[in-house]
Image 1 (cartoon, one colour):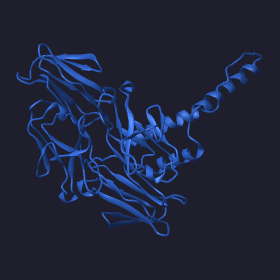
Image 2 (cartoon, one colour; image 1 turned 90 degrees about the vertical axis):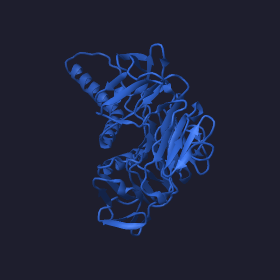
Image 3 (cartoon, helix red, strand yellow; image 1 turned 45 degrees about the vertical axis):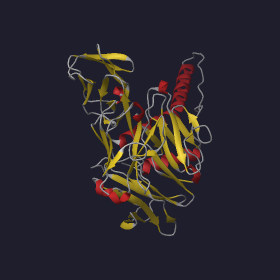
Image 4 (cartoon, helix red, strand yellow; image 1 turned 120 degrees about the vertical axis):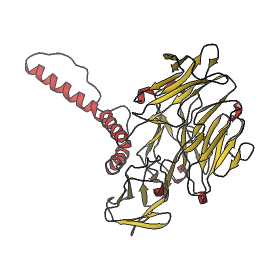
Amino acid sequence: MLTTLPSSSQFFEGDFVSLSCEEDDSSAGWTLWRNTSKQQRTQCGDVWGKPAGSSCNITLMVPHDSGVYWCESREGPISNMVKLTVTGGSVILQSPVLPVMEGDDVTLLCKTKTTPSNLPAAFYKDGSLIRKQPTGHMTIQHVSRSDEGLYKCDISGHGESPSSWITVTDDIGIIPSSSQLFEGDFVSLSCEEDDSSAGWTLRRNTSKQQRTQCGIKWGKPAGSNCNITGVLPWDSGVYWCESREGPISNMVNLTVTGGSVILQSPVLPVMEGDDVTLLCKTKTTPSNLPAAFYKDGSLIRKQPTGHMTIQHVSRSDEGLYKCDISGHGESPSKKHITTPPDSSLLHFVIRLLFHMVMFCPYVISTLLMVSLYRKRAKGKIFRVPILPTHPEQGLDDEHYDVISDVTTEYHF
């Protein structure tokens, strides 16, 4: 999953942002890419950004950094896509970067660049005024699909923010619901969107074609669906939905195999705490044969009926899964991603870790100095190593202020 710190879809020119591919398996070779109006499919560190471990930092953002960002790995999985907007204006709307879950409360913040962020603001959806708030904050309680739309805000005397689309569980529907398919299978993909006027279309990237649309060289449009009657191995790739207004749905990675075994598993990331069932299935025989299940190349369980349930999944269950049925073969591998149930908890943990990294050296140095003083007071002399009082790497004061300002004012 791609995350941003600060967690916002809009930024002022000159702001700092850190983008991270949240993936524990560093051997997978995750890299961060983007599309902008000036450059297509460029990698962090080439002509933009500075790699820092699993993150990519942009120190001084400029308007041509506006675009779509995503993560890729050597194994093929691609993360969610994040759309960032950088403005040279004086007002931004801080809103969720990722799609929000139906039923959640969502807070929007209308913020100016140089003045306090508690000024009265007007909030608009799809061009129509929905609310004026005296403190610049607006909370949408228990969001539903009807709350999806293009949002912006205005602060009198300062100006108007760019517009940002807020998505509520905007998923690609897949029948059958599986990320792996046998050669020759039928699959129907749909952009689950009630507003047909938005002009939603389904696109894909494969090893042979990039960003091609359903109905052009592949698939057959059928209403809001796209049907592929007999899938082939070169139909393997990443599928997503786009609209004329710009929003992009989650991305789904489909694998088509010419082999005789597949692993049927969740297409989308699963929520922490859920139970997840994996099914090891053969093409021509019953799907209740004994199967062995593997995670990251290591055997985790053998099941007599070909089903394995992972109860109350957590982030430690993320990994590359496959299965094997003796005498039939092995399935392709599938990366499983787990998302936290509460994004506010994730933001809290990120902030906590950041402050620990920044201030632990000071705490350790102080404890050592106190210990040294006490020992000398007792007449004992000894040597202690003096730790550096500043971390070797960190953010400058200006960028730290930006992050502190955003994370303390922007809550979900």
